[in-house]
Length: 452
Image (tube, rainbow, N blue to C red):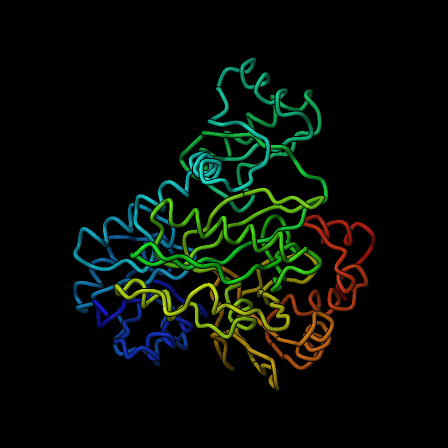
């Protein structure tokens, strides 16, 4: 390894997950925390911890200067960004490199390219990765020219922000009459959210599934893919349930897609872990975006492959080659992950507060990724994710049954959580039969399926 110490520029369950991987590799760990956020579990396990600023993320976890100064003060040799916060900020990756430190992730240039949805789309088309029919560049600001470009794609279509994601700067346009308002609204939202008003348009699919491919690549040009995941159960483009592998899709089609993703990694000089995201409809895959970081849902892939993705990410950043080849990857059984959030299960309003009772489930094939404990105070300043409940079974049906049992055993008191929603979903016929799409949750809600 080219480094012996890692500063973890994150918090919560992902910080705890990274600490565990570092301990496995014998690496020294440095934790950071904002004011009032010093009672996190991972801070009890790190070798050193340092306060980096006020509770507001803009002055702490998102402040690049403070993170870099903390690394200098503690003697850290590498920085792991986790996910969220600074994980996909190209200028931060460059600043880490310029400071003589190792950024645990791909190069700044690759992050910058793949972070621009238009540039990423063009790169994928050049690499032979399937993409939706759409514009090859940014939509013209001139209304008539923009309309001509959209008319050539056909309706329905979706307008997307080039510089962002998470549902912001996106508008579905069912017919030409709604195009002008959709473009204006999306552009204003994109400027506000990403400081980038560039938009592009793609064909809108009415019943797609969300399927993704996990990739790993090292500095020698070796690249492999670690299977696929289905992340179709989501609310406002935020995933709630993830599975591996994606069920009901011909394995030969998935294998060809996975290989094209590995080829794309080699073509762009990608290093580290990453995820290619696709829409799948009527037997065809279409590229959406690439996440140049560790994914929240990486545990389901670890469960079906038996492979430690975070440890491999650290090894690659430390200059080591991949520890396995494509022929070593074998998918065993089925895994499901439920994201448990501190939110009202009906309105999804955040529910910060003190956890008065925390009892995670256990047993064979059950894994819980969480930073909770009795008495932990969930602050209002950060993401509401409090736990990832992951189960593994020999079949998808087995995994669903195991998840039902695990959800019934899990206890979180003192706050509202989305546990009731997940319990209901695990018994809902459409989900159990695999009859889902990215619009599944909104349609079942409209049909009267409400959490208790």
